Length: 145
Image (cartoon, rainbow, N blue to C red; front, side, top):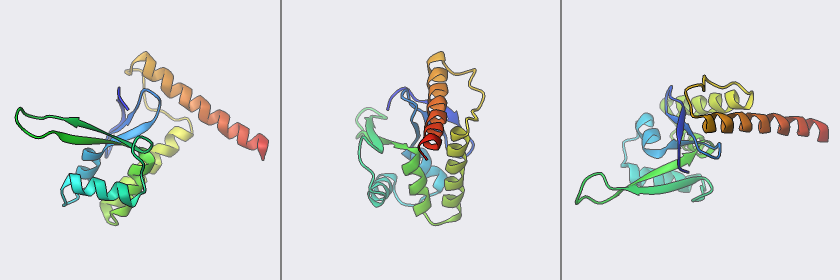
């Protein structure tokens, strides 16, 4: 899940991958939710609670912030799992984040997209392609019903 482009930034930044998948960074989700436990513990527990699968639902990358320090790990989490993680917090912030993610999903399913003119032509094409595929899937469901 490389080459991320931010598409939403109202509550938690939401990114789109070069394959059209919507994702969030675990550290940003953790911060927005106001979780008091350490990020590393929280993210592992929540991903386990959600039965999330590495590489299917999230990816992990390491980064070294300063010379001589241990690397830190960043989790890039698909939107559906991030929504479930927010729901598991069972507090007002968790509800707000979950509702925010639902609005984003609905917005993109209905074909409403933000002003993407500032995005790269490749990212614009991916977003438009995903919207077209969603519309075709809905039409196919109607035909098969």
